[in-house]
Amino acid sequence: MRNDRPAGPDVRNRQAPDKPPRKRHWWRWILAGIVLLVVLVAAGGAILLSLQSSAPPLALPGGPVAAPAGRVSGTWDAAAGSVAGFRIRESTLGMGGDVTGRTDAVTGTLVIARNQVTRAEFRVDLISITVSGKKQPQFASGLDTKDYPSATITLASPVTLPPALTSGATITVAATGYFTLHGITRPVTLTISARRDGTALQAAGSIPVALPRWHITQPQGYGAFGSLTSHGTAEFLLVLHRDAHALPGDGKVR
Image (tube, rainbow, N blue to C red):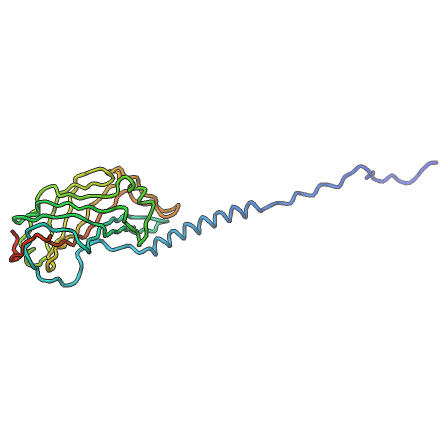
């Protein structure tokens, strides 16, 4: 029997067109989260650097001093109040500041005879240095304090003292010495300010330190975006007292 119905489209084997795949944006969110985390860490490091207190350079204490008492000639020992440390510049995201370390573990002696400092040697315990009151492993690692736990400064040649020292005035002298750090000794030149304060002798100064000169690996900064310069400054404030065998006198430099 003949079927006269118009033939329609044959849909028996036709499939519906595929829907476009749904775009997935999860990887973009992860990438954005990582970028945000990096920015927050970097910003936190910059804020930490800006808020971190930097100790002022070591210098003679301010305020009035007592009249000099006793002779200047003799052997002077480092006593309580002596401080030493370092200062090094750090930069984080364009924000700069000084990182300063301090220790009061300073020992040594200075000998004065006939108007001259004839001998001086002082030792600083590097292991005890703290930054903002805390130990910093990156500096201990950079200085290799496990093998080289101390630094020393030794006078290379006598230094003549101006007569004004006997009156309690502050004097400034230039000295040459040998600075031993990281097991390496190098000649250095330093400027020292000194004065009498009662029975004490106070002296303060600094030594420029280019880290590669002492074969020191540049310490790592705070955070991935922080960097430290390759040069710094060693600073010291010495409070000295005559040893027990010193004889009393008239206070003149001899």
